[in-house]
Image (cartoon, rainbow, N blue to C red; front, side, top):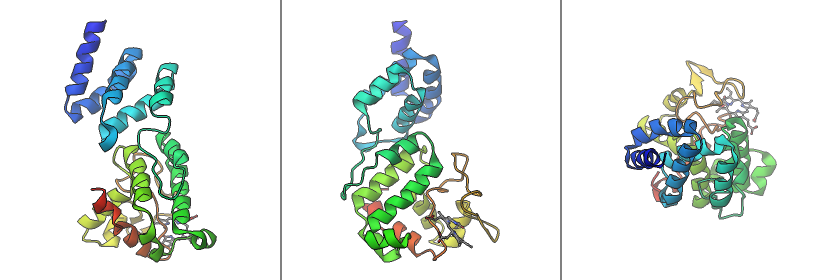
Length: 232
Ligand code: UYC
């Protein structure tokens, strides 16, 4: 009834983020009433500074795929929760969709293609990014790509996650590769079969950067101005 609905809504809105994370699956399983509470929560949220609770609510509602939830998404967030800003007219809708659907392998391939586009015509032809091209990647675009990965993986994936682990490893790449599951002992994880394409992966596992030509591209991405400018 309406009384218990408003009680639940109140409990959700005023809960700690830990309580909110626990309540999300319960509300989703309740059906219509629970979905309405989560929809109202997103409608009233400040999404200028999106957080992981909002991301989780959106991702769960996205996966319900019922008329009530689809209508809300179509009307309020047809491109997803995260803004798809680009300084160079790249359309990030496909990346947003793949990540929302938790299709991390295709999202990873698409991300590499986007990095080639950001690097320019010669990179597109050689099919790999040269490290000096990275500094010219627009802040806005790297921020969009990273927000999508981070938000729709519950904070597990994204260059910013890798960068933090890299910093905490004293910028030692060998330590980083082991932390993020790119190397085990002296064995490089083999592309694509040996990587983990779901959320059971270690933090920072995705997106991939091929290290065949060394770690300088990774170094350049982690040293890009976006991370301090956008407070990652
Ligand atoms: N591969 O081993 N990788 C490729 C990774 C290395 C190699 C693509 C990541 C080590 C070759 C991606 C790791 C290595 C090719 C990745 C990894 C190696 C290739 C697709 C753990 C040998 C094919 C790129 C660090 C010891 C030729 C794309 C080529 C492809 C990723 C070999 C994403 C994270 C050092 C021979 N590897 N790669 O765009 O040039 O299709 O792509 O990193």
